[in-house]
Image (cartoon, rainbow, N blue to C red):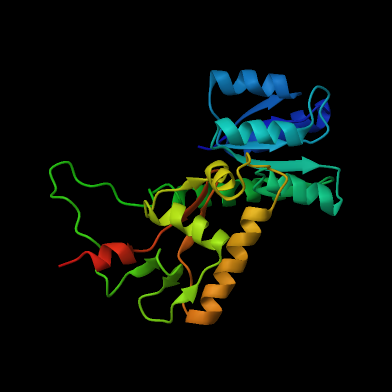
Length: 250
């Protein structure tokens, strides 16, 4: 059963939505402000948080930023603020869904169910853990692996042409291929690329990944196996070897 917290300062709307979601089979609690949400999360975690932006003590954007820093809960922003910039900021700060009031409660219910299905599918770790008594994992088969060339600054798929990398692209991929399957946080990526803390309002990392994916696919014909990890950052999820490792093989 999904655990939901509805954060809405308009009492009638909050109570009606809590009642509707409760009758739909969810475990639901209500909060009127950010501080009350914090107290509820301290008492028990939530799977989904339905969050208004215009709250009396703290705006929903700030609340979303705090949630993303401390919780894996999915966020549905439910607000009267319909401008494009508000939508962009909300999604950049970690909202999974942005709904504009007035909204049919059935749509909220459908979004909750969709988020729960997505979260359940993504519950498995990116890399399967090694059995307790298993032998050390074998190195990736170079014939089936991507090759990260940290001498020539290139990335090459198993069956395609090598793609040259810019300095920024090289730094980004070098972070990910060091531990394939393990997510690298946006904070670590930002510090490595710019020397500054990650700015949740900036889309520079996402833009870099989008351009790099397009570039690799256009030049090699293969999709770059870089996957976004919700609420964390990015991971390289394909088998990969470095050119240095290949050169040192007897």
